Length: 500
Ligand code: TRP
Ligand code: ZN
Image (cartoon, rainbow, N blue to C red; front, side, top):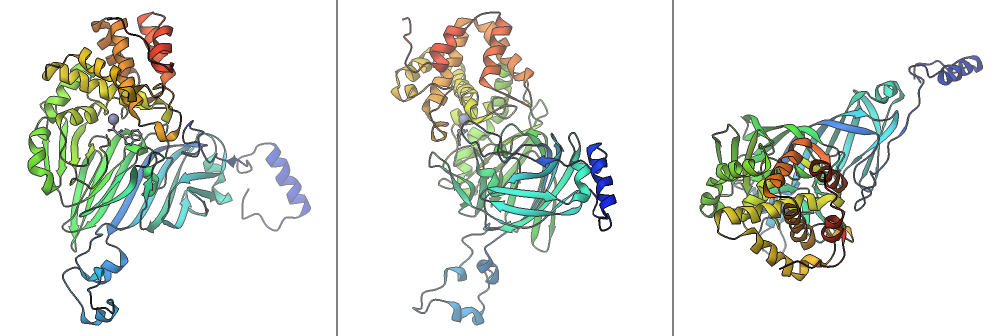
C-alpha cells in the first residue's frame, strides 16, 4: 500500500482491495519474520525471514561519559567540588580505568528476504537505539528483551518481498554489556586493563552490534572502529586502512569470507602489532598486549608452521589472513577461535594455538548449523591437538585417546546431545568428541580417514553443517554402515568397552 493514497473513498478502497487480491506490486502485505530460529539450546537466537549477506559496522569507542569530562592528564579545579566529601580523590579524576566503556555505532545490514516481510527482528542486548531506516526510509523500532523489532514504512514494503535484498541502518549507542553464559562464563563486551575485548560464543556478539546472531546466518563484514590514541582497534580479516585525525584513529577491518557472528571480535587496547605473511601468501596480523609479549613470542612465531601442518592434515587454509590477539592474563576467561585471528586470554602454549587454528577449518569455515553441533568444532579441534602431539611431542594418538577414555568427565553425556545450554562447552563435547573422530579413523584406515577429513572441509567450506550431515557424508564417502560407531560413541549414554 502507498501512503500517498488520498483519503479513501469507498470506491478507492474497493479498488485497493481488488488490487491486493490480485497480488499487484505494492499491494502485497508480508508477515513478520520470526523472533528466533528455534535453536535446540538457544531458541531465541537469530531471527527468521531474512538472511544477512553483509554487515558494515561503524563504531566509535571511548571512555565513559565521566571520564570524558575529566581527561586523564588534566585536572580542572572547577571539577574539584564534585569529588567525594571525605577528601579521597574521585576515581574519575584518575586516568580512565574504563577507556573503552562507551560505544556509538551505525550498523548497516544488507539482507535478503526469505519471505514477504512486514516486519523483522534483530538481536541486540542493551544499548540505546536512536533510529533505524530500511531502504533509506525511517522505520519504527521496538524493543522486547533482546529482540529489536523493525517495522519499515509501507512505502518500502515492496523492497522486502521474498528474494529481494534490502538495507537496514541502525544507529545506536551506550555502554555495552558483559553477558554471562548459561555455563557462567563471561562474554559480550569485556573491559580489560586498557580497553575492551568483544567475545561472542555463543551469544555475546549481540552486546556490540544488532544482527542475526545465530551461527546458521553467515555474512561478510566491514568493521570500522574509531578509538582515542594511543589505543589500537583489532578485529577480524584484513586491515584495509588506518586514518588518524585529532588524536583519534579509525581502523577499517574487512572480512571478505563468510563469518558467523559469534566469531566476530573487536579488541581495543594498547597492542604491539606485527604484520607479515606465510610462504603460502596467507597474511598474518598479530596484536599482543605488551605485558604478554615476551611470553608469547616463541609460540606465535610458530603460526606459519602450525598453519602449514594443519593444511596438510585438514586441507587448504580456508581464509586469506590469519594471526592472533593476545590479551593480558586476567583480561578474559577463555580463548576463542575468532575468525582469522583467535583471541587468547594470555600467552598461549602451542597446544592451545593448534586448537584455535584448527577451529579455522572446524567451526569457522565449516560452521555448526545449530549449537547442538558443537562437538564438530571442539571434537576436531581437540583431535588436532592429539595429532600435533603425535607428530611433534612423541605422544601417540592412542595415548591421548586412552587418557580421554579414562577421564570420567568425558562420559557425563554423549557429545551430540549436551543435556542443556550450560553444557555445550563441557568436557564430553571436547574429549569424547575427539574420541568419536579417532574411532572413525580406526573404523576406516588412515589414508581414507584423512581423505575424508579433507573432503569434509572442502564440501562444506564457508558453509554450515550438522551432525547428521557429518554422519551421512562419512557413510556416503566410505560406503559403510557405521550405525554402531555413532550409537556407541556419538549418541550412547554409557562408556563403550574398548578391545585391548
Ligand atoms: N570455543 C572455545 C575454544 O574451545 C571455547 C568456548 C568459549 C566455547 N565459549 C564457548 C565452547 C561456548 C562452546 C560454547 O577455544
Ligand atoms: Zn575449541
